[in-house]
Image (cartoon, rainbow, N blue to C red; front, side, top):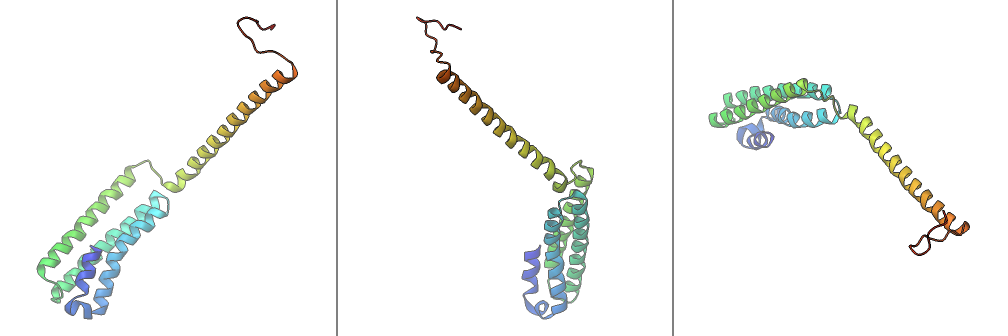
Length: 160
């Protein structure tokens, strides 16, 4: 949608209407930008808020497309095609909002500390196991060297 809006606003009289071309471009860019910004906030609640703003931007693009066709800046075919695309994007966003609101997932911000704690615990557990194994080997070597216990063999059974 953003690329198509940019293409339409570069040509003819639409390119000379700086106010409308700038406004529709900003609204189209806003849709993509708000998805990214909302996601990066790290909570599903904030993400949903940004998705609602996106729906508003879709409506804004549709309204500005109507102005553009009324002013003969774009063809009726281009208007129908782009308005339909904006409407479908708005529908996808609505479905995504409904999915997020019905989900137990609260967002990355809430899951990151738990994931980091599990990773740190696994790291310390691995260090502990490696240390324990090294101690067992060192103890066995010490016993062999200082207690002079010969290794057991079938012909000479161990005295222990």
